[in-house]
Image (cartoon, rainbow, N blue to C red; front, side, top):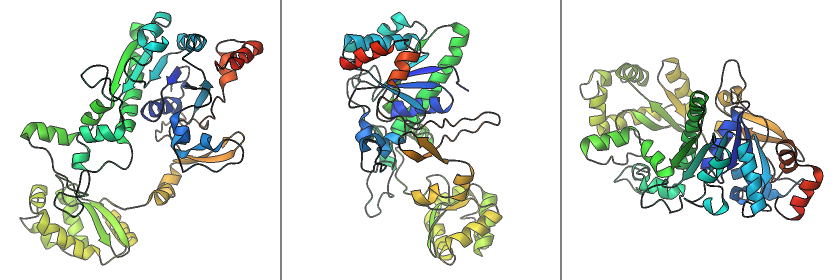
Length: 404
């Protein structure tokens, strides 16, 4: 879908690389610019590492692998004048530049938006920071944990208030980073479409905190409407019941009853049809109001069958449910495998490497870029020679001067 689009990626860690990985999945050529000899910090974020004898183990930190498939890696010292000029020339021949330095950080290197726009007037330039380009906090570094805390997410995540061990809890994955990356990729594609009409590039200002607040969804609208902050409800849903895990004979299973018809079917399967007729439980609003009376009745019956038995019978009757699976179980789930969400790619000098693939499916186009995450500087010569048209001697001179 994005074939012919070139993205110059000056971002590191997760939010920016997640955005550019999606663009690569959709067919864009993504050139990842990294610091010579060091590269993206996540190359060393481990263990775990993928074990290999073929190259530096740090090049295969699993954290790095998760966000960099489908890209080309070139090493350039942007602190040098020659390095800056190389990046500016790459920007001139690119459609998009994405970076996640601190506010004003790239100005010192002559790679800020105004400097890049002077040589590439139609560039789409996307900056990702913790707090945005404006506001009193704009100069602070942005970390997912801090943003989850400040943006309200931790206050509604964790065991229900009053339960043992209840405390604000971060999400198990860095959702502020990940969602910011998704929003950034969306904004970039909208800017590309707009440029087709206007012929103009644009500047995109993405902030982790903005994204975190946006993704509070119904919780933020509830707070705005009532003036009250939502409370932690653990694994139960604040406005739907029953919509939570239950303990079966051999483990846990979630049941997600979304309407009154589903609840009536659920009660029949449980052998408790009288609950659906009880005015305390007959509507969702009543079930939420009387959750403390309802849930123990359901929980007692759920103990009588295994996860597999409940899953089979509930799905057969259209009641949404699913076992709680560990990550390895999820990755080996037949549905996940059938959908091609886990694929082996061949990494030169290493061999097969199992990765999660892009979840987008078009009916007439392949979306998953099967290029593995690149080794540090793997494509430096290719980019210098094929895009910047430098010859072998010029490339060798840049390497000797430690510019690339």
